[in-house]
Length: 578
Image 1 (cartoon, rainbow, N blue to C red):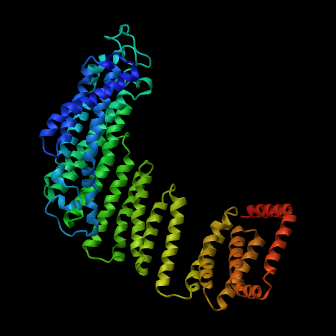
Image 2: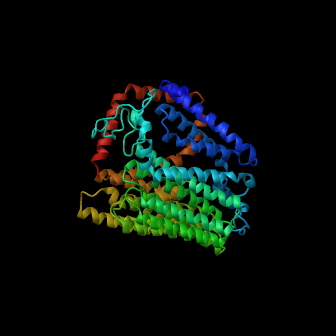
Image 3: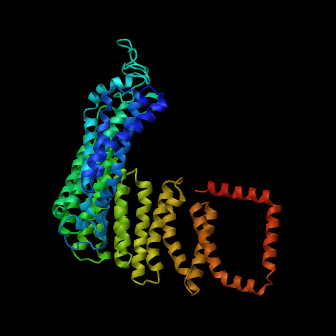
């Protein structure tokens, strides 16, 4: 009564207090008569009943306060049901401790330490009621707008509706002519006074209905303790339904159409993770669920429209398929390093799909989705050097396959070369090869011949392209071995070869020869002279090295501009080399 003629702020506060008081008074009667776990449901029913205020002649601001009270009661009730939903979704994580230990008897047995389900019987009912109300609002939103239009047309404090707008006249911004003030729930209209648009509100209602309806079905299965097989099938079917809703799209308005499909997609991914974890209790269930998830997400990615992030669907399908290939190694009772090559099946498929999709925006995410599977395969093979070499070589083959495409060549080509070289060196290390030059020189000589022929046909070709790979194939491995070689022949021969290469690079103005040869010569010389430098430093007085360092700093500081010019001339000289 006080809110009826009160100013705006007091009217909203009065409506809020009135709504909460009505819920406490009316809901307290049945709450006292129902079992201990059901009073919240009684209050929720009363709170949802407050939404009927849209059909009364209560002023707009006071009615908004009542609706806020209804939303607060519903939010409080849903917060009480949230732990049950979290327990059902994350409970199967405990199955990771003992995969394929055997299917449990009931759904609750697969959820580990969970809340007391017999006392959670009201949770699915509350979730379902709220989801039903939001879903009804989404479905019959135009009718709801027509019912609530008089509520928007009334000004706070007015005994009745204000003077209506002229026939055919629209409100500013294209809103329907409901009278003074912008209707915050008008379909397709922008929210008045900075509020949300009607389409955004409708989309939010639909998104909330999707989330709460999914949670209600999951919690109901746990409360009823359905058989394990039925729970697995039900969760997989829920994922299929959510994906169908995601690819179907929403309404005509962009704000409305984006909310429901995107929410359905997010919930589908969360449901797929929960269903996959739940299936880990049984070998047969794991194959069935992950195979179904792979097919469902792949099919959804093909059928999805432009408004749905197809890349998410495609990447999820690759992830489920990668997990499916991992199950094969476990079924065959292979050691982790023996199962590593099997995990490369999914990356191989992604490379083929990337070549098939070509310029499609989904191609790159699909190919990148196969990278984690390859990394896991390499990690599993680390414990066995021969299998590690095989896995690296197979990864190199996949990278080379991707490098066939011009748009992937700049990255995939170098990656393939690096993987092949690394695989070769792992294989040599596994075979305990000590004379590495016997394997590198047969590669270096033909590579340098090919580079020489390339430079003769195309003098403008870069020396890095012509001679870089061939020189690096011998210089870098020999340098790595010489760093730990206690004998003197290899460091001496390597230093002499690096010196000759450096001089040739300086004479013929070839950048690759000068840089590679000079770097190897410097590192090799530093390694050989380091013991003598340490001995000399130990024989000198302790104050002499800091003094020499200070003197060097003084000299450099005094000739700073000259040194800077020298550095720039050196940079320019290197830049002019081929």
